[in-house]
Length: 69
Image (cartoon, rainbow, N blue to C red; front, top):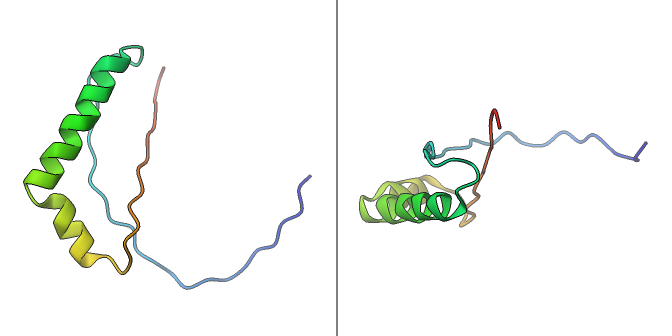
């Protein structure tokens, strides 16, 4: 078992924008196109800038999750 320490930290808030990819999980070209289209859309319509305006730092994280595959 690994050594670890639990620490108490200040709370924080996580905000995000979600999307569901429609391509089959084996269609890598389709998935990449959907992801690129998503990023283009959130940059063009101002959603990314809106989240950045609320942020207390410049970090941007991306979460990918495959479900039921």
